[in-house]
Image (cartoon, rainbow, N blue to C red; front, side, top):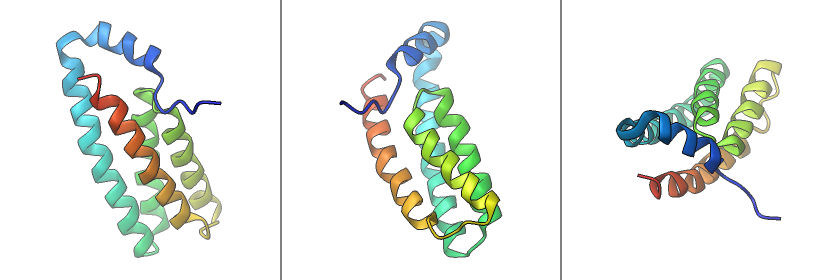
Length: 112
């Protein structure tokens, strides 16, 4: 079964509504996503799991809005683990976020 990294149907609807602003939205998301990933990594390194949770929450919402549902799901898992006090998987989830973002970035970059 093929993995779908980005919901292209959802993006097509956004592109139709936003027209010329679509590229701005994608570029802003890509820049912000890198920042959020760095915030997650830094917070995990400091063992600041509230900051980890907040950055994961932010990246989750932005990713879901752009149809990057798998990335949003991984972020949700990290957010939930931090809220529940389960920190043992934070590093591996962070790596999964970074790996999935590479797929998302490649897909989104094709659209602008």
